[in-house]
Amino acid sequence: MYKVKILCIILLLFVAVQPLMAMDNSSRLEDQFKEYMNEIRMKVNKIDDPVEKRAMLNMTLQKIIRALDTVSTLESLSEKDQKAIAVIRSGFQDKYNELNGLNGFEKVADTDLNSFADYMLQDLEQARRMVSMSIAAFIIIILLIILIL
Image (cartoon, rainbow, N blue to C red; front, top):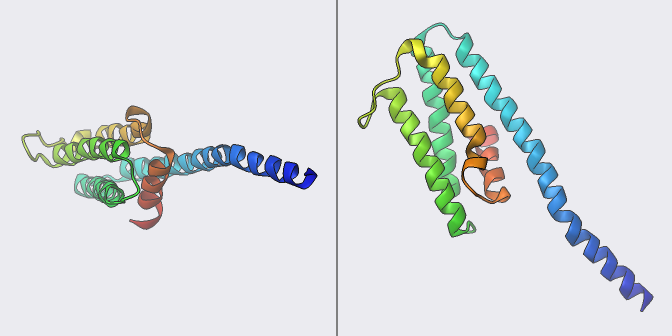
């Protein structure tokens, strides 16, 4: 009986600690993600040529949209997560369209590209807070953006 009690306590502790470990990993990953976004922001701000600057922003937006498209096809996502990802994706598609003057948006002026980069990347950093989504879905998106795409 004593062994069963110890086993139950260990199992209970394991179940209780798992969410805390996931939150800690999520926090570290979010910090890494913010560092990645700051690197992009600094690179864009250092580029003098507006054509190169726009190309870097386009590449970043395409990477984000591709990551969101990839995650949205996962069957394990809840309907709530799929809707949240669709909202975030729509926002970044609008930013892509605005950057390039597509679909009724006025093209971002060359002189405004640094400000646009700051605005765009702040929006991405806040996406998790703006739309309710599970930590698991958010982690997958971050990993795709940083490590794979």
